[in-house]
Image (cartoon, rainbow over all chains, first blue to last red; front, side):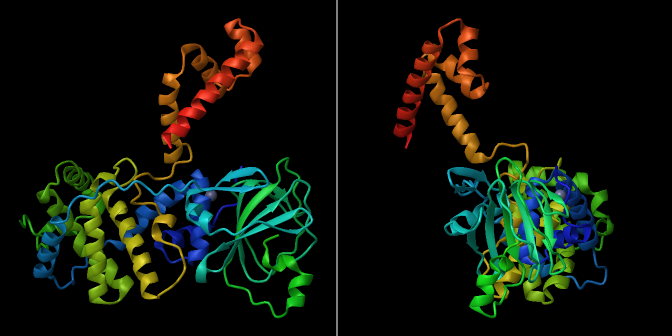
Amino acid sequence: MIKLHPTQAQLVEFAEGTLSPAMSLVVAAHCDMCQHCQEKLEVINTQLAESSLVYDVSEQELPGGYSEMLSRITSLPASHIDVPAQQHGIIELDGKTFKLPRALHRYVSKTGNWSHLVGKLWQAPVDLGDMGRANFIYMEKGGRVPEHTHKGNEITLVLDGEFSDGISHYDTGDFMIMTEDHVHAPESNASEGCLVFSIVDQPLHFTSGLARLLNPFSQLFF
Amino acid sequence: MLVGIPLEESRSNVTKPKDCADEMAAHLAAVAESRSKTSFAKVFGYFAPRLRSYALKQMGNEALAMELVQDTMSNVWQKAHLFNAEKGSPSTWIFTIARNIRFDMLRKLQNRKEDVCSDDLWPVLCEQTPDANEVSLDEQITLEQVGQLFDVLPDKQRAVIEAIYIDGKSQQEVADELCIPLGTVKSRTRLALQRLKDMLQDYD
Ligand SMILES: [Zn+2]
């Protein structure tokens, strides 16, 4: 059961298109998995349409411009059905396959190889260009991460499985934002381990290689 | 032809979107079905000025605003068949198209290299919109293809395969149900799978 959703304010910004692209991506993926938020979005879209598409009586009309535009548009052919590109949206790890939510399908081809971080933790980096750093992170059954905190904001979506961190229990579909205020020690007890997608909203700057070695999790959600 | 070109002084433009939703939905249906320019002109006349007021606020410049209006209304004209009155009103649909185009225009203007586009975030103009309960398109195709292949199998093999792979029964359950030995179920399954595999290879 999904318990953790984006806030109403985040959904509104997402619907307006004003939320950051990184956050929008994770919110979109969450909404693919969450009927509850899909329904909320429908209401928000309706309200935004009403408040955005208003007739401004003071508007200087451009009859010429509009009729030209109208005839230009109606001379365009109807669009042929564009069949969406075949994106299977599946990632694999250790013989297991995971079906990703629609919003993340594009990123399958931009996902690097899985690497073993430490203990029972695996990571595959996702190239998001300037948007930030993203990772798929997989915690095997019984995996544990030492207590730690985070640098910057990390936005995380549980794609498959569940885990606990001593504060909460997180289930498939849960959406969360972790900040520097969070200190926790995640642990996966689910029979199948747990896969998450995680984006660092602001790219992190590591000051030294040593800090990176000492705290490999500072770049992770966990 | 410029039927009913808009920009009325008339009362119709102060009508609230929700008060003309049915009328606009009917016009969109006419565009989708018969490419009715008359109907499109009504939709255009009503929404273009409203889109312009949104676009001016968002883009802050007349040329970009008009580009946003034109791209939005072009999509309405070309993809009217994607409008689904059961899922929302015409104004909501048109707003979401404009919102998507605005997003892509702004990212382009900012020259961002981020690989994110509005279709990923809001699948407004995808031939199929996400539905948690819906089988995805490629899965549908596969099921359909496999379904056709099933028809080619001998009846006995097909019965076994369907029971196991569609109804999710165990081989033992199938054996009990059909009153045949377990070994027969196993060999029929193996033969059928081999045959399906061969046919799928031919498919490629
Ligand atoms: Zn939700």
